[in-house]
Length: 367
Image: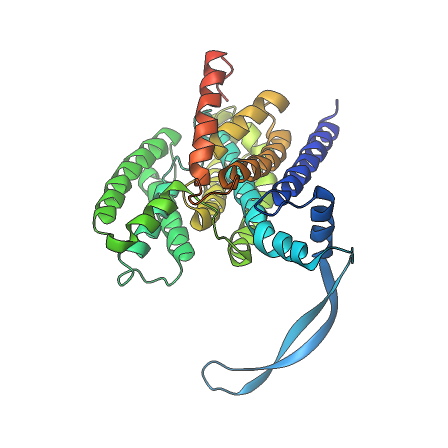
């Protein structure tokens, strides 16, 4: 079958699966809602710009009034849905579900890139310390808010992740070249150091200890549309750009010397892939905390199903990751109870045994 046809077929199927998982997840909860009602409520929330209204604002320094454009929106659909159900779906459940899909999408895409980049099926988005850096930034913001120059926990985690990733890259780069083995070892060392720093901060976190531990476990509880607005644009833009480099990632699997002879600017491509994978991982873990195994297991399963060609593997892994995290978060929050299980525990509890099963079946191969 032609590659473009296979890509379209797999993407369409996985896209349909994602829609089904989203609707099913939104239907479950203390208040049960029929899937058809959920679908209509989601469609009712779709709106398009219908006009432009000019309001009045003020300059932050001088205080002068200035015109401020504001778009007006009109709903595309107007299905008859009870107001209570409309509110529950669109304001209480859908933000969390969309965020889970966004983070799963980003982590699986980043994991696919990292496994191809390192030519290692055990690589995942946190391999160069991105998750550890995010954890250090978040725990520092919780334990020592006075000395952390960010009001937002998301921003502290995001900056911590990116600073760590580029510090590891700087350590591993010498003479304009970045050996993959050196990059991997530097990542392991920095993760160990940050782990020690996080443990130290937890000891001195006082009343923030519970919040810090919950963040480290990875949770989507009490997330809203503001969290989606933080992560979604970065994830979509980063994944789109990474997808354009699927061919270069295929060529890099042959080895850096062969890739150079085939016209790939090896060091520039490695930097771009590493930077974008780090950015989308940082955007995801900054809002949810550390969620493991999504970027490890999902790309590997999809590689077994669709093959190693990143032009097919990359989009299918991203879509499968979105469905996987929505499904696991649904298990984490349902049935409802006084203490919700963080989704990071569920992904590890499901991902680790399944990966061990693949190992026993000798289904884990080199990339």
